[in-house]
Structure formats: C-alpha cells, structure tokens
Length: 164
Image: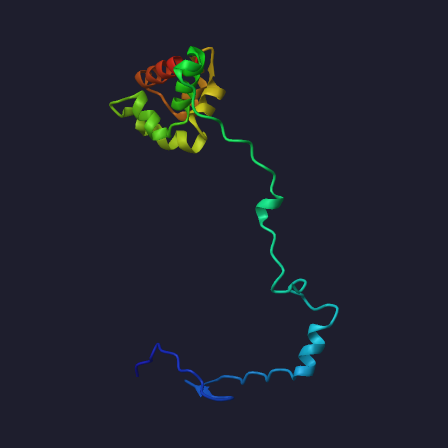
C-alpha cells in the first residue's frame, strides 16, 4: 500500500486522521477570567496606554549633534600646503580596489584586496599605522601577506609619494 505524504486536517473535536487522534482545543476562557488575568500584578503589559493624538518624539531629537561637515576642498588659492593636503586626502579616501588599481596599473596587486579590505577601514588608516616619515614599515607586508619584492616596492613607492 502506498502512503500519502499529505496530512489530512481534522474536521472536528477529537477528529481522527490517519489513525492518529487529535485532541480538541480547550475552549477560550470566559471574559471575566480574561479581565482578571490582564489586571493581575504579574501580567505582562505592553506599556503605558498612549492617546492616539499624543505625538511620538523623534529619535533624532535626543541624539547628540554631529560635528559640522567640512567645507569645500582646499583650492590652490588657499595656499600650496592646503592644496597638497586636499590632494593627499583624496588619495586616502578612495576605495581599496581603486587604490590598488592606482598603485599598480597592471592589476597584480588586486590579489591583496580581500586581505587588506578585511584588515583595515581605509587607506588613511594604513598610513597612520605603517607610515612614518614617508617610509612604509615592513610589518605591513607581513600583516597583508605581500611576499614578492616587486609588489613591496610598488607599495613603498606609493606610500612615499602620498603619505609623507
């Protein structure tokens, strides 16, 4: 005999389906008992009742204010130091993929993208951690798995030119 994988729904109290007796559901408590349960001191409340006209305060009103956004980027008219800083910051705010493509136009350095992107938040963070006086600390290569000398030289050149 072939068994059906479909389950039959019981149709009444104590109905029998496929030889299995399904117990009937208990009746709902009378309204007076429900009121007594809801007003008991151990009942869980959904919170204080609020009239429909009561406004809900926006969350932003209680949040601390954020610092003002910086002004426009520095231009050469602001002075050569300001323009150089703005240009350096532009390189440090780029995505890791774009940055690696700029460091190596032949795209050999893209193999380090995943390790770098999970280890660091930004190129600026890499500069803060590993660059001192324009020199890239060798620990960067150990931490990111860069073993090839040619790849190390490309990173060193870029950091020397952009993070000094």
